[in-house]
Length: 342
Image 1: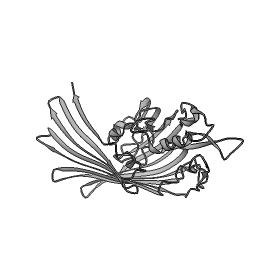
Image 2 (image 1 turned 180 degrees about the vertical axis):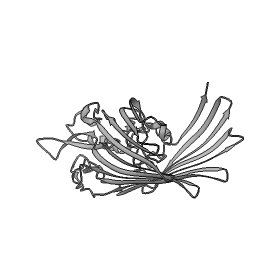
Image 3 (image 1 turned 45 degrees about the vertical axis):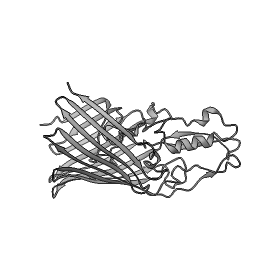
Image 4 (image 1 turned 90 degrees about the vertical axis):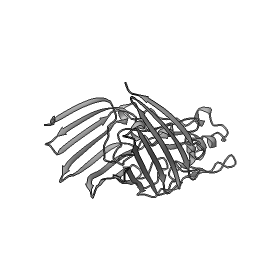
């Protein structure tokens, strides 16, 4: 039988939830977005973190887990070059137009989360009942996507003197479900994420939101299809906070969600087929952000020859310029990879 209790510690990538890509409950490890040519490799862009993980197998079909992450790190984004987020560049450019602002404050700094005040912890209970896997989960941590806090002059609170990245504490309560139904491997997750800004009045804190995902995979006519839809629904409408920078620049909107739709929906699809006894694989992957009308298309070809694998792929960004994907619409890429197993 299984070991009743397991305690482990170290630098780890820990998967919680049932979703294949970016599920609502997979909150323990941040992601590396410094090179978006790797973004479809969901497992590969996860960043290992030091943590303590406890597992109690309460019988053959019930498992209880606990995790403690003593230090925090958010998602990694490029701070220069083609993959630097557009909203950070725009804010830094705007700060640079204000007379008297220091060179140090023109660059938005990332806080240091390597202290126990940034600890995170969670618990998860999962069970298999009647052929279906289900779980309940609670997590107390930080949202890995940073917010921006505009620093104001103490003597003149309408004059910005800089900006910094901050991370928001949140509580998460969620559940997931997986089962094979009519030949479809179905997976579903849902979670409430409650931040400290329950009234929407703090411009540097994300509003509480509900996050769900539903996906499946199935083989048909020689093809393998994996499809997932995930959506974030903001539960509180934020209050717009603007600072007048006239005559230096346009008004500065300090609410981090002012230009973000109240719902964010992403569809992830992957279709693949193998030929010649698994020697050749054709694959097509797409990410589609519905509200932003933006997408990333990645076709690839993989050829295996003995212990060597050759892969060629390219990526095409399309959509509006202010979207999470559309802002990189001029950043198409091509890649070639050779892997030798020995």
